[in-house]
Amino acid sequence: EAGVTQFPSHSVIEKGQTVTLRCDPISGHDNLYWYRRVMGKEIKFLLHFVKESKQDESGMPNNRFLAERTGGTYSTLKVQPAELEDSGVYFCASSQAGQGVPGYTFGSGTRLTVV
Amino acid sequence: QKEVEQNSGPLSVPEGAIASLNCTYSDRGSQSFFWYRQYSGKSPELIMSIYSNGDKEDGRFTAQLNKASQYVSLLIRDSQPSDSATYLCAVNRGTGFQKLVFGTGTRLLVSP
Image (tube, rainbow over all chains, first blue to last red; front, side):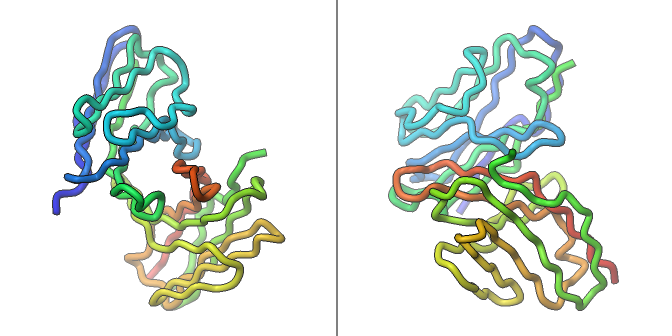
C-alpha cells in the first residue's frame, strides 16, 4: 500500500508569492489532515477533511491559507500571499473512516521556506 | 502554558540502557495519548497509544499514563542506536475530536 504522498518535498519562495502544496492520501482514506511545524515549535493542527468536506478548520492561521479537497481524493493547501512566518514543515496525514486518531499515517512533509 | 510539555533534550543514554521520556498535558478532558517517533527529515511514526491509567507494553516500549497527575511517559528498554530520534507526545480529547495536540518533542541519543 502506497503511503501518504506530499509534494513538493521542498519549496523556497519569496515573500508575497503564492505556493500550493499537495497531499495524496492513502487510497480509500476518507479523513485527511493538515498539520504544520514552525521551526522550534510543536506540530500544530491546521484542518481536517472528511471526504471533500471541511470538518474542522480551527487551526488555519488566517485567510491567506486555503485548503481544498475536490472529489474527496487529493488535497491542496495554498498560501497566498506567503509571509516569512509561514516558513515551516507542512505535514499531511490520512486515516480510514471510523478509524480516527490512532489510524493516522503521516506524509513526509513539505518544507516551505519563505525568503 | 503549553498544552503538551516535553523536555526538548537531548536525552543521552548508552546502548542497552532504559530511556525514559516524559510528557505532561494541561487539558483534563484529554482521553487519548500517543507517542510518535520522528527521524530527521522523516514523517512522524506512531509507536504507542494509551487510553487508560497504568502501563501498556509493546516489545521494548512501555507507555505509562497517570491522568490524575496529567502525565504520560514512554520507557524504551534495551535502547539501541537506531532508537535515536525525536519522540513526540500527542494528546487527543477523544470521541468527536479528531485533532492531535503535540508537544515539541524530546530528542533521544543512544550511544554505542
